[in-house]
Length: 71
Image (cartoon, rainbow, N blue to C red; front, side):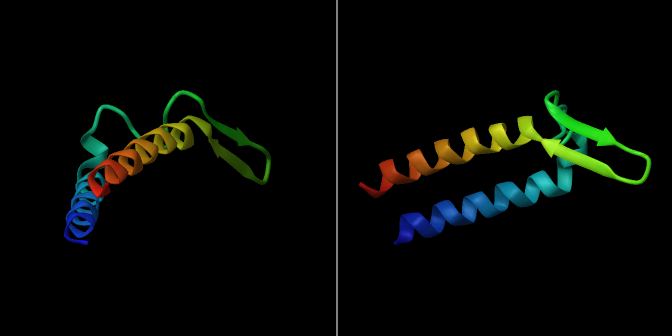
């Protein structure tokens, strides 16, 4: 239980740092190549495909590491 709490805390701190300093990073989440924006006359459709793939890989890696610590 303690390891899970520590890992959760580290993830929250990392997320907080990304929110605070996200504009200064060289890679802007939500503006990656592969994120599509379609602008119409009265609407905008945004498809963050590359961002979703990147977050999926990162979260899968985090969950894999968390399972390794649990066992």
